[in-house]
Length: 310
Image 1 (cartoon, rainbow, N blue to C red):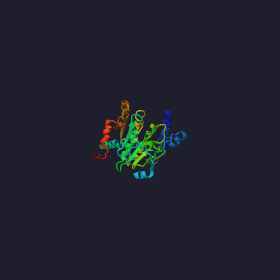
Image 2 (cartoon, rainbow, N blue to C red):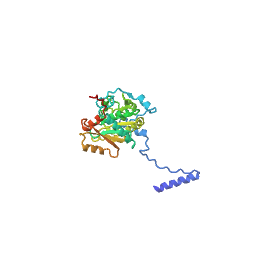
Image 3 (cartoon, rainbow, N blue to C red):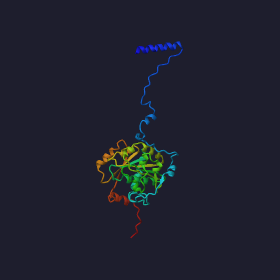
Image 4 (cartoon, rainbow, N blue to C red):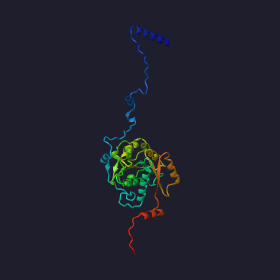
């Protein structure tokens, strides 16, 4: 077969030479491949109902500024829990308020050493007070003139931040991560100036996969320039992996430990969940107000009326 092929080739070259025409270079055989199949044909071969639907990341058409945010995000009538939300009333000497001011000062001191704006608040186990700390930390931040704070409830498994703030939970973060809502639809502003809130949204079946789909990073990149602080409340670190995933999008982790309640081994295990990430501090919550330290602290700094002379 090879001799016949060579003979035919020589005959073709001799014929072309006699006619003054350059012989055409032999063309390589055309081999169909997966890459050469048009995308439209490939898609058509799969029924539309069986193709995965990936919602586009929500976008906005106008310039994304704080004025745009103020004009488009929802103004809500919150009814905060007076027992746990410490800064919605005018009692500047209420128990716990001074500790949060101290925590605020420590965070500003830390900011002088590292880049720090997005803070993840977590705990080892449930019911240690992480949501209480996150909400009041955001509140004390905006008590400083001109400071803006965004509070995000990223606990998609057991959200309760909307309850203590006295507002609705939907639409929220889960709707944004699913591609069903844009930023303006999920951000609320309440009665406290410069405090904004993104609730968790409705319950979803796969919170970890939803957190890891990339949309949270986009959300934070868009919102971060508009705020001085972004406070993210996460699920507890030991039972589930969400907190470790959320820490990837934040600048630092603040862990809440409950006095006389959090097991030492659980706290150590939670710390290991954030290896390679910045643990900026630990908040001891639930200290007995009747302890000697607490009695000294509040009596030393409380306002006292002048005592009449006997």
